[in-house]
Amino acid sequence: MSEVTNNISHDNWSTPKWLMILFEDWFDPCPLNGNNGLNIEWEDKTYVNPPYSNPTPWVEKAIIENKKGKTIVMLLKLDTSTKWFLMLQEANAHFITFFGRLKFSNSKSAPFPSVLVILDNNKAKCSHKGKCDLRDSEGYCLSKRKCKDKVI
Image (cartoon, rainbow, N blue to C red; front, side, top):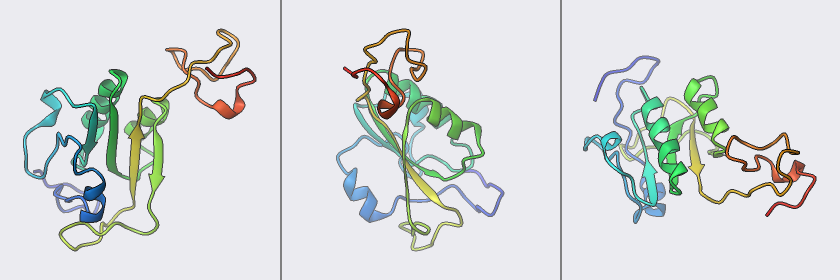
């Protein structure tokens, strides 16, 4: 994998074992030093720990696969200033942050904060078509708490 800047000396950050246990039966299109998972179809339950130097193509692929009804979980560097983070927000992803910095399987702590991103296929349609300003382009409710009508 390529060398990168911004205090990240490499892209080989193996998922912590305790976290990998949660996703041990999930498809991994991006195994450490493995094949390029961008060129293959992902499975219904997919866990991705992409290269941190350029997660954008992986995020784009995850959003595409999620639109096919698949649940995608990604372990990413927490960086809210990036285009790919905004793309995930617009895709109605869920973000789970960690307290402190993750200690990766190589026993080193990451030089950056991390986030677990979940793109699930459990979206609710707004029952009040055309009236809700919190719907995405496909009619899915972006915030159930703010919808005035019943969500079906």
